[in-house]
Image (cartoon, rainbow, N blue to C red; front, side, top):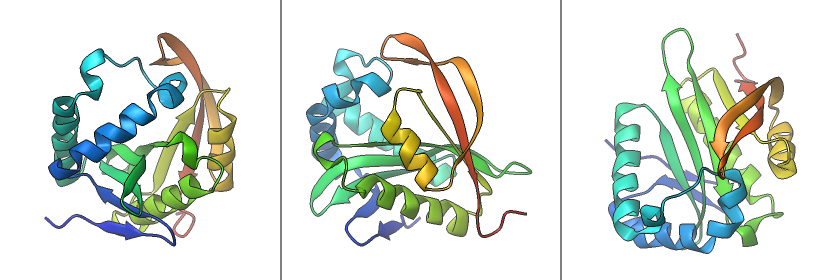
Length: 183
């Protein structure tokens, strides 16, 4: 199965392959402190090369099975983030969840917006999904602004929704319906 490569003006989005493991590990290690407030607690071996290789194998399996579209984000030859469409449900729902993260030194340059827009175009146009859901902790103003700029609308507020950085955190629930084919 050929893997898609999404090109934007400045970025490339693609599914990681095993040979990308050192780049993936470097991204995680360089951004460990930066991402910690927004992610689950990570065991010490999470950042090992072996663990990175195992997750890349899982990403490939998700893509092959259609359960997810786990894109890595590249700026030239450097991995700078992730744009992961997961929990894909077909049938009458045709929906998924969106997760994303970007390197600390790439914030504020509209790179995440560029990457997520390319991913949204892919899941709506190429995969035929109808709804993409994304959730964020209320303190994450950057995520709130990003999602609103892409047309996401708030659909709810979930108390103690996910275990993030050592505690159960509330989340704002957002969703985007395919703007081209809303019916």
